Amino acid sequence: MKTNELIAALAADPAPRPVHMERRFGFALMIGLAGSLALYALFVRPRPDIAAAVGTARFDLKFLDAASLTLPSLLLLLRLERPEAKPGALALFLFAPLALLAAAVAVELVVTPSSEWVTRLVGHNMRYCMTMIPMLAAPILLALIAAMRDGAPQHPGWTGALAGAAAAGIAALLYATHCPDDSPLFVAAWYPLAALICAGAGALLGRRFLAW
Amino acid sequence: MIAMPPKGSPDDPWSEMMKAGMAGDERTYRRLLEDISRFVRAMARSAFNRARMGDAEVEDAVQETLLAIHLKRHTWDMGQKLGPWVSAIARHKIIDAMRRRGGRRIEPIEAFQDFIAAPAEEDPHALSDAKKLLITLPPRQRDIVQSISLDGQSIAATAARLSMTEVAVRVALHRALKALAAAWRRSIS
Picture 1 (cartoon, rainbow over the protein chains, first blue to last red):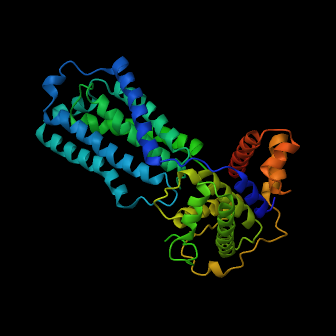
Picture 2 (picture 1 turned 135 degrees about the vertical axis):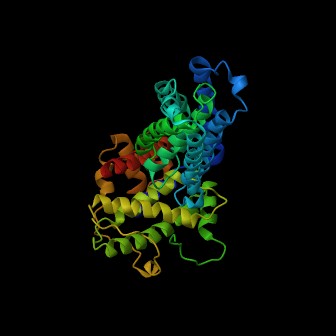
Picture 3 (picture 1 turned 90 degrees about the vertical axis):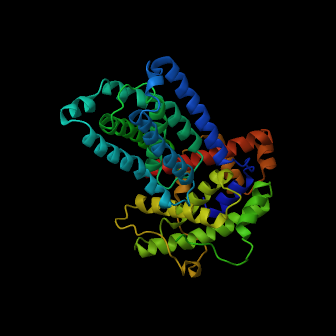
């Protein structure tokens, strides 16, 4: 087939309805979030002493950490689904949650006796944390990947990984209301690991479904 | 730096042409695709030459780019210029074509100042992968693509010949184009 023959076929194909990618992205986020909330209501639920925990520094820090991952990764994701996009300075904000965690860990090591460190690090239910965060992230990740299928990211694998990280951030926001472990030692050890699992799943999905 | 399309007119003709095409102006859309094919051909030829890979796959890269632009055009943000969007898609597809050739050193494709000056006509002897991929389509779809592209028939004439409705022909054509793009993608991995 010669190129001008292909062009003839393309021109004969009727014009599609334009899609507003940002709107589609927002819609997918809502659908995914609804799925996660349903799973949360069924399997997770807030911890019994949540009223007492709100306002304590360690508890609140978990949400700050999760939000500092969620926000830049969502914004970056929205940008990268276009082929001509460059990550730019926004990508640097992905280091924000790590910097925040590192600072919190440093403070925690200073203010708690070293005999407490291992207990706080291991916590009560790290295995629960490692399964619940990916589970809560799954509906969001799937919805985001589906919304981006028509996009044209330069690096489908990396873009998928970023979608996984964004989904993990939102899942961590939800899960933090359940998790009884508030020490930054616990959070720094297990939450990033759970986020990595999500990012890995996102990378696989991205390579499979976002390639074009 | 993203390579920019030739700056002939100050008011960004490609974006206007694409908008017209999206509004159903078939002839303008066709002219736009012809313009873009010349631009991508020059870009691909320059990239292949720099990598010392020969011209064999240039036309494949051109056709893949056109197909991707066609199948993604509904996601183009009309508030942005079309040129950078087209360049980015072309660069992606040219790199794909080079990978398929097993090129070991793929230099970043950017900062072309002179590729517009490169010959922009299709090499009539170039054999295209598209022909091989066309064979993988279901017979009815292949028939429709060939009727419209190779034989230059209209949708209406094709529909009459195959005793199908025009809508069914359009749907089959669109499916065939998507299948073609998917087959190309598979041939990379």
